[in-house]
Length: 154
Image (cartoon, rainbow, N blue to C red; front, side, top):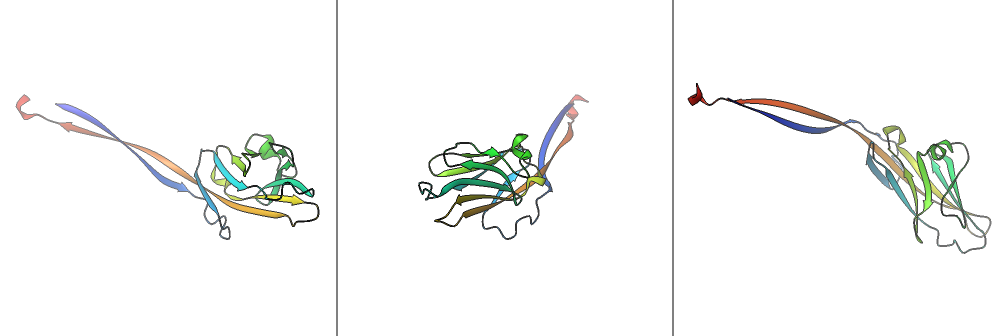
């Protein structure tokens, strides 16, 4: 008699972000437990004398500021705890991109993330908004046991 164990791993959504951002043009999805990277284009007017820098927003509140010459954003304003505690970073990636990175995302991280280019006079401030939708996956492992009976052994 032979016994065989078979394992089957399945993933089924346990919870999702729902309609956290029904009005956003750009939606980024991520599974819970991973790091989410949201990329934004840098302003074409960074060389303007009135350009001041960028602000990063999470859920409509400023959490970081990146000045004209800086590479990494400084934690600031009402929800600065998310970057002070290492939950999120705001930084320049290269000559054309900025990035908000949210570490080890959970469903409650779903929502709007925005970057605003700030000017003192000549240009209107410009903003780009993205919606993060986090899906929590429930991983189930099922074990099946099957018996193979060889009747010639009986």
